[in-house]
Length: 169
Image (cartoon, rainbow, N blue to C red; front, side):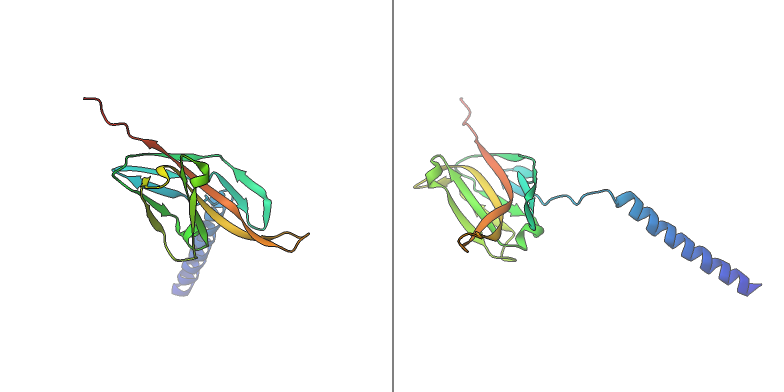
């Protein structure tokens, strides 16, 4: 009798585990993985945003174009602290800093696993006030007609700045 009880308990345990595994698969099968986000912080304000554009690396024609943009209120005294998701940080990524004059935009490329956070001043002595930040994940592509290699973004996040106006007292 003890042996039949042990077999029954073992069978029930296996069936319960199989049902739990099937139930987990069933409820999560249709969920798409969510794209990574970036966060920006300045002077007590925090904003997070998903990608503006997110393409399949293997087929750059398959893109999710959400045109989502974050907005952060800034002033001239407090820098912006940018944080990127680990998924972004594991790859080479580029940070573009946008100013009043588009020709004055500047960028930095960060190697894989080098950093997940960057501090950006809101005022630049030569370029003026910071108007926005763009984070891009880059992919090397080859122009088949010339053989030339160049980097193009396959994912992009955008944050605009809204300048805090001093109160009129």
